[in-house]
Image (cartoon, rainbow, N blue to C red; front, side):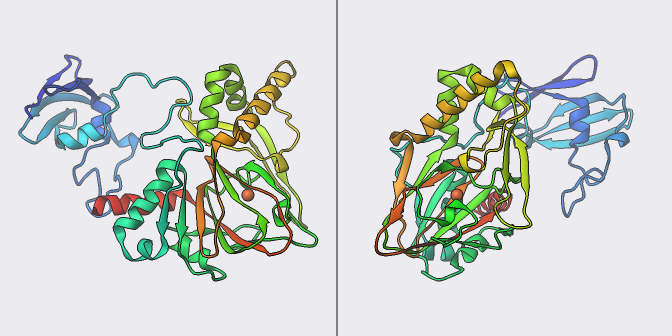
Length: 375
Ligand code: FE2
């Protein structure tokens, strides 16, 4: 595709044009900082060798030429020339329209309700076939959860699941923990009570970004698992009540857990978390571990509670949740910054025994990115 380039007379930016595409502008300082030459980037590990202070304050584009497959840019006062492949420039463009309203979603994230068929993958396939593993991790990235079926009904198998993409996050609950009825439970999860949809451990900062729940026995009546897309719930709240959305995003809630000896975990974080540019970044929602909210102005507290109540109602709507009953050897991963999980109560004869552990999304996304690059 023929590219043309023009440099602003100031030398402070250039404009790259190609037929059928919007023009892309790049600043001299940005291009110099992101130069791909071996004096700027270490050839082996790709890490930057210069600091911001090494870039002359008066850096300007002295000339720019559109070659067949790359843009060649010369910088003053260093008198340095650097090449930028066109596909690299397009991939890294920042010259785009202002992002849409607060609560926008990252590329590749797709919200859902109860009509979604749970993405499910076979243990053996994930272990033996890189393409299946890539699809499995890609489903977690896109939908925030995925089931894994056909695994061993063996204690600790969830650690093998985590090892397929990353690393367990050990907490005060251990490397992993048992989710079954206990006589003196340190957490209501370890009872037969139903649990409202929630994200785990919002009292931790940083919060564990992934959870794996792995089934070893499930012959009790009830005990179904339900997952709810917190991003869809937040989107709905924003449509219905933008002020309520802004309140839950704009003020920190407080969360706390001190249910076992020697532990007192506290956090001060919003229920709906946005990146500084408004991207929807996370959800924290957990009735059991909410602490008194003390960071909302008196004048806004009732409106805050109305928004909190409405978010809970949306989350509890039957049409929002995807329900399934895990069989022994089945498990699921949730993105704990987005997808809430619940379970129906259980009792009677039979037993329910799950094991749970935490892991982190950066490791999962790293493994996914490597698999995608190899595909
Ligand atoms: Fe939980």
